[in-house]
Image 1 (cartoon, helix red, strand yellow):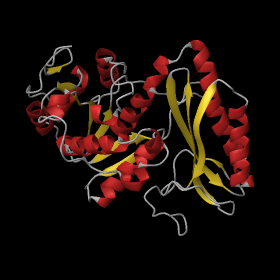
Image 2 (tube, rainbow, N blue to C red; image 1 turned 30 degrees about the horizontal axis):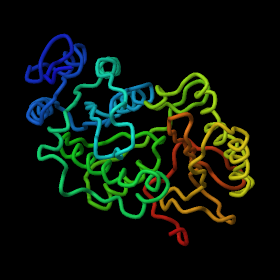
Image 3 (cartoon, rainbow, N blue to C red; image 1 turned 90 degrees about the horizontal axis):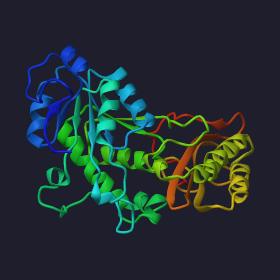
Length: 326
């Protein structure tokens, strides 16, 4: 699709439309920094919510936009396939690109502005010489399997936070490690923005929604269901403690020989260290595995101990890691 600014069906980024007219006409689409700056200046109101995506939007993204729409005066959606967070053998070249369908979802959910830049707009001098380091938390779990991934992710998130000048940024719990690192970056580097987590959205069969689900064949999808089944089994065993959670989840995965498990962990939600057997409280049960040619991740926040079970999101996601967990 040509890179041009437009408002769906009606106007351009520089049209002086009222907020109500903008909502009726669809979002302003901006491709450059200048277009974004001009369109952003027209958004009146105290709160600007931003939903960052890499495109190939699905109902999980729609839920983020909907939640942002409920909370804020205006909503900006960014659509940018960030090359910095893909390794040399990963799926950047074949990642789904569905801009027209993405824009239809943004329109349906009431986004005011869509920022869809090309890489040369985000990185005008090419590969950036300075990047944000994810630190030790970026080298475990997903970071161990995908070296440098989180540095690239945090770099683009920081840039988009500055460019959109949002007051709140919405991310899904499905990418739990990413969410944790964004929170830590915002706190450690004094970003004056709120980071809002939204529970994972699942298909009726339990599979966590992901743009990469488009890669799955029908038989692959049946195999992939073992990931969410393992999480449910682990969460059901939460009242019995960490060992029972791990054992129950592992039993489901072992029973499915066609999934190549990368990791299954029960970790503290802010340190990502394995929780010991005596631990009681909130924890993250996370799994990653390859089904066919597709690598999938999933997780479930759980409350460990008597009365425990699955949680939607953590009660205090900005809390410091507990003593002894680092």
